[in-house]
Amino acid sequence: MKRSLRLRRLIAPAMFIAPAALALILTMAAPMADAVLLSLQNWDGMRPPNWVGFGNYLNLMRDETFFRALWHTAYFTICTVILQTILPLLIASLLSSGVRGSTAFRTLYFMPVIISLAISGLLWAMLFEPNFGPVNSFLRAVGLGGLTQLWLADAATVMPSVIIVSVWQSLGFYLVIFFAALQGVPKDLYEAAELDGANAWSRFVHVSVPTIWPVILIVIVLNTINGIKVFDQIWVMTAGGPNYASATLGTYLYAMAFGAMGASNSRLGYATAIAMVILLLSIVVSIVQIRLGRRGDLDSQLEM
Amino acid sequence: MTGSANMSSTPRWRRAIASATWPVAFTRTLIYVILTLIAIVEAFPLLWMLVTSVKDSHEVFNTILPAEIKWQNFPRVWVAMNFPVHLGNSLYVTSLTVALVVALATPAAYAFARYKFPGRELVFYAFIGAMMIPPQAILIPMFQFLRSLHLLNSLTGLALSYVGGGVAFAIFLMRTFFLSLPGELGDSARIDGCNDFQVFWHIYLPLARPGMASVVIIQSLYTWNEFMFANTLITSPGLKTVQSAVFQAVGQYGTDYTALCSGLIIALVPVTLVYLALQRQFISGLTAGALKG
Image (tube, rainbow over all chains, first blue to last red; front, side):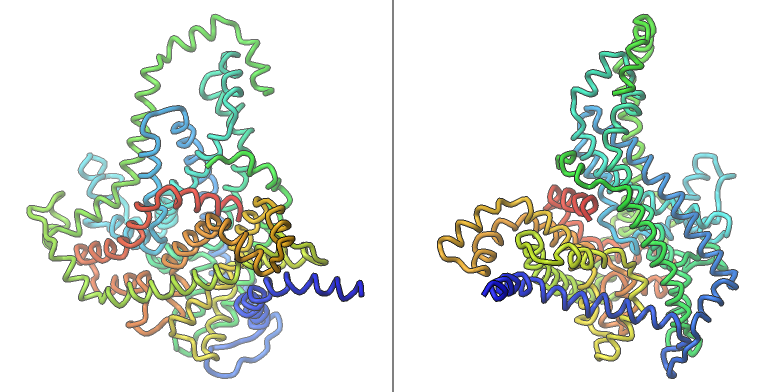
């Protein structure tokens, strides 16, 4: 009697959850398991695959281009984590210092956020065009002709260029997050600091930053995860070029798998092994996030 | 607070000097200058794109402003890039994905928030663990999987490929929302004779609309803007979504920047209109999604 009652209590939640569970198994868990297996095979997408064990991973360890892609991914991630945390935080605190028109500024800064990474990349590829593009034209017009670059076409400037695009696109997003968090800092903390003679900078460092620290951590984690996965904007701008100078893990695996679509040199197993590296890095970051995160504190701080 | 304790030891005369050398008006002006400069940097690419789209093609690199506004670039590109078809494709994929995600995730999120059952935490974390999986990891198996179902190169197949990640995220967001609703409502409805499904449907679902709105906004923007899957799982030109169609167009139009800019603008119009209409919900929905997800 008691057992059947307990079972009946399970029926309702099971029915609510079952459809989502089925969808997740079919479109997430199964492909994920398949990917693990695929990374242990050689497969061109046409002929039957053959098992190579850890062969793909061993080849990765010997693949110089893979390590370049890994380094570019790290470089992109480190730069965007720093720039896309500090710049939006500073600007958000300027905006929350009681300036007029802060809503208008935020609406404007947010515009690029709704633009897809692919379209942002296509737009900036035009802006960076070396001969006639507006970036170089502007530099020449203001007498800084010496600073003109080949931008995306030069191995030395291609990574900074794609980082600029990323900062431009995401600034408004992180800024709005920080702005919301800063609105939640109790006003009396600032007043107390001001009475004690703290200037704006020390109020920022000693009051704002410690109070919204959990939000800053989340932004750092979001930036890290996005950095590890970076693909869209780089693929549309350079496809990882010139000569792999902007290849990241994302673009390198894509080139391996689909770069020569339908051709017999499509290396799906090898590409999947690179995807496993991205997965591993994402999991490490997520674990760090869970360790650091005290999400319970967050809701009380956010007043949207 | 430790900071303010230290600062109280600052002598009064130093504070006086500090405030005297930085008059409020000067600081204010400086802040506006900085904010305006950033606004210019953020807006310039978009303005350049707008101006270029209405130039004559020989003016692109020679003049800052067009001699005469050429609206005809838009109808030309509208037809040449086959926009009615691509916008329709994107709309179909986005609507189907959003409908599936909301329909699947809402009841599940409700169950995780409102029922106690053995293994609940474990199942929940298994679900949201899917959010950790980067899209690259499932791209190739998904390609294979859809091919075996004859859903490769199909808009429905593309929508299905988005469901897993979307559902995981939506459950996470919606559960928080359901947790914030009072449990007593359901208890009293049960006393009045409602069964489990009726409690969910008549009591909690209507209250969950704001949470669902967030999911709809986040998922629509994500699906509409998604590029990697759309560019890979669809190969026929006529089935391309907007993102992947404008990418293909670059190859065809080369340095015809007036055409490309007109194309990018057409591609951006739907999202921009929704953003301008629902600005507040858009910004708060996206930021809440980021912080909770």
